[in-house]
Length: 171
Image (cartoon, rainbow, N blue to C red):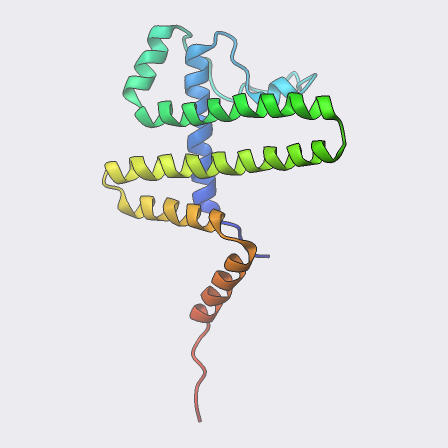
């Protein structure tokens, strides 16, 4: 199985995005609930909240954004994605399971991939600004990998395997 991107970079990116999203959401929405809990009709009673509740005033939200430009930028990307996904999902329900519905499902998948790419780009920009060039380069490499066609990805994987293989010894 070929890795789509380095698991550590993907995990770090997703955790940062989710943490920033949850922090800003809790600071701006009085009863903010994660999308996964909201989608579950009857969440388990023993389930702990994803993040501790934060004071929910506009002043707190403003302080969080001022303290963390990265969090504010990631939240803006995620908010734009949510708005676009809501519109597409309404359209999917309207057209049903026709060819048009399938095309809309593909658009939804593309929106999600584009959001992932944009989140990585935002993090890379902030890492560069902070002088964390190694992290920025890893994030940018992940973006390049996500943008590769399947053929390009296969060629890159083959080149990595050849580079990692020990040289053949001549007799």
